[in-house]
Image (cartoon, rainbow, N blue to C red; front, side, top):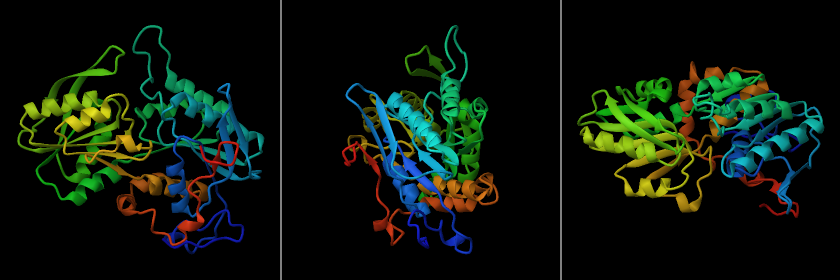
Length: 369
């Protein structure tokens, strides 16, 4: 990746394919929820992460101070709303408000993982639609647009009154399996993810099977009722938007084994991996579970079965296109090959990586939290 540094030191050119275009300034910041992903996005773009203080007082109040001049700047704030969810959401909202009051020209909330996505409808009496509430809060805080990945349901985009760009990791995940050279495949998913799973199945040149499941009350359990499709004797790839407690994944795995599937892989965009998820995966017969780094993977959750791919180049390319007024949708149409090749990207490609700090968040004392 060719990198050309501007005299300001705040931004560099966005890659070798952009070498002929004039460089413009982008300000990239990160909250505390996934600074490593933000640093990788910055490396892809050649952008130094902006300086800010984001920390919690003893009374659990969150404090934010932007340490750079952002007046009339194009600001991108990377903050997935992952664990601790409530803290991550409040950090996001307070940072957006800080940028607004600092007179930023445009604020884009980059939220690779959107929490509360399952609460997108009233499926019981007297319950909230929390996904809409979070959308309202982001808009009211002052965000001008949202950049996210693989929402639980696409209609969540309609909860926002600001532009929403929803990226998908389907092409990155499918390319991982294409490179493995597996044969006799079948792609398995549930009805909620069927549309994107169909694209996945087409990319790996495999038929699609559907799992019929029923959610059990509010206790994070789902009952698998049927596997619809021919899966016997095949290698199965179970595709979903996220792996949370892995309870549903274990039920699907057992159902596929009963149907005569002899090798099972799983992949998802978001590796939430809460509760007993890691223990369940470790004790299962799953050959491999592939996730992305929209949510950080702690050391204690890293298993030989779990493979993590980086979405940094995909998000970075989307930021470049948004900033330059180019099409983001083209990433998944005429330029699909570009997206698939991004899985080969390595954060060590740039010989200027030493000049890009891993993060610029402090706890108020100058040290990273």
